[in-house]
Every structure is written in structure tokens, then in C-alpha cells.
Amino acid sequence: MCSAARFAVRFGPVKLLQALLNDKLIDINHTFDDGRSLLHIACLSSNAKVVAFLITHGASLKALDNAGRTPDQLCFCPHTRKELPSRYQTTLRMHKKQEASFTEKEKIFQLSADSESFEDLQMMLHTLEFNVNRDRDPVGNLLLHRAVQRGMSHLTLIMNLVLVHHADVEAVNNKGMTPLCIAAHLGYGIIAEALICILGADPNTCCSLNHWTPLHFAAKKNNTSVTEWLSWSDTCNTQPLIDSLFAGISHLNPSYWSNICQA
Image (cartoon, rainbow, N blue to C red):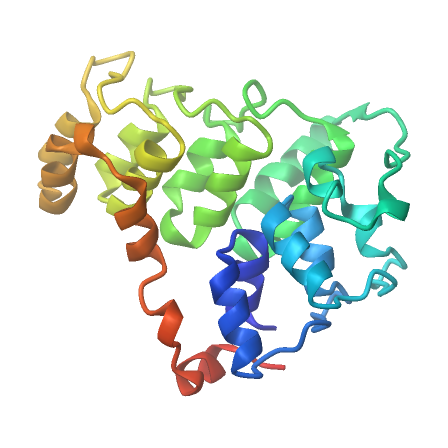
């Protein structure tokens, strides 16, 4: 499995995928252990820009995963589907979603704990009636709260839940904490920046129980870098954040990526 390649097609940016291809660490039709190709995962992740890039560069639309499905059969997002060739532009035929059972909801929460289960989680979220803003785990967390609690390994899921599945970035858990309050409390600076600068979280939204802002939580834990950043978050600019997330991508060292990529 190639962790960098999975990250690139799940979330982006395209330049990371381009770098991996240029350095011949993967090819355009690279497949993973589950039989899914780069295009399968990009479609399932609703990553329209990467889908467009892969199609333009000759990725196969006929590749089958281990369940015998082609990439277009995993393309549930209408916006992403527009990037496929015209013959695939018909609406994907889907049975009406069935309400997720108690066991299926448990499974969804279990999958959310493991960043390697991202694709399996996406399949369930796209095919079952599960409300990301209502359905909670036994301790009162929504999926977004759980993802934030796990930090950088779950950045892709955090972005996906908000941008694709419309999770409420201001939703509170049983402790009255928003995702941003959780990130500040745990000292996850980049997650906090992403929540504000990319996903639109309000840095002044208070915990509904003790009325603390994210800044209070960061200061209480002496999370200096997060405290300093939250103090000037009203001047937020997305580009520095994006640059910090993907620093060095434009001059990737092939030997570095070879250590984490296994063909």
C-alpha cells in the first residue's frame, strides 16, 4: 500500500499525485490490496479535481476492484461524476438508502477510528441512511468529533465529512464542545487552522456547558502555538495553511517516499 498515494487521491492536492507519478513511485493505474485503483478511490472520496486529472492522464475506467466494481460505480457525488466521460454522465442507479441498523451504525463508528478504513466508511456513508449531524456514539460524539480527536491521521476524514457529507462544523458533543474546541484542547494546531480557514468554523463559538471559547481550552492546556494562532485567527488566510500542510511536495525526495510507498 502507498500511504502518500492514498492521501493524494482521497484529499489532494493534485501536485502530490503528480509528483508521485513523475518520480515513478506509482503509475496512473496503480492498484491497492483491495483491488481499488487510484480512480476508484478518487471517485469514492468525491475528489473531483483528482478524478479529472486521472481521466486526463489515461486512468482506466474499466478497472475492477475486488468486488467487481468499476470506478464509475463508486462515483456517488453528482459534481464529481461530471468529470467522467460523457457516456458515464447518466445518473448512477442506486436503490433507495435503507436506514442504518444499530449494528451498522456501530460499524460506522468503528471504521471512523481507523484511518485505513476510509474507503469502507465512505461506502457505508454513501449507501446507508446515516445522519452525520444526528447519529452519535455511546459517549455522545458525532463522527466529526471522533475524527478531530484522532488528529492529523484523520485530516482527510475531517475534510470529507464537512465538504462531502455536510457535517456541521459547529455541532457540539455531549460535553458541549465543538470540533474546534476539541482541537484546541488537544493541541492540534493544524486541525484547528483547517477547521477555521478551510471549513469555516467560528473561533468565537463557545462550549455550550462552560461557555469557554477554543482559546480558553488551548490556554488551559498551555498549548502555546494553538493559543497564539487563535489570537490572530481573524486574519486567517488559506494559502499559508495549504502550503504548510503540503510543504516540500514540489520537490519530493523519491527516497523518502520510497520508504512509505510499497508498490
